[in-house]
Length: 170
Image (cartoon, rainbow, N blue to C red; front, side):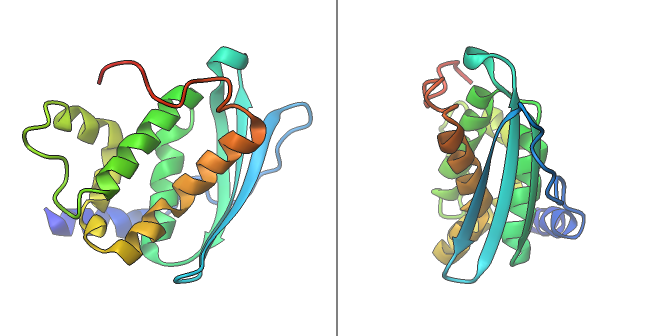
């Protein structure tokens, strides 16, 4: 299983989703964030465009450019694939679950967690980063893009449009 996870990370690093910055269209709500991991030099610039009304904003486009290790680049690619087309509320929920996974120290979601299967299904390819959570320095690499996404939410004010805790049960 670990080899499969490694392959998923390598595939996303070699063929990243959403890579290549695209300008945010005039009259479109959108934001940009530049994040750097000073520990290893990974960096990303992310642009996110939103559509929809205040209480139902959707991520219509997420593009990025960056450099760094395969973990950071693959994680951003997975993020782009997971959240594009989702509402801000749904994307924030995915991000919360990913951050939770990064706190498992390589063990994954506990077996006594009734929602573990639902969380893994929600994360799709992002579950490949379970092993990364064993290494604190690498967790920062995996979370770089997720920090950029949250920063675009904050800069555009879309987080104030929603509650940051996902209310629907998994």
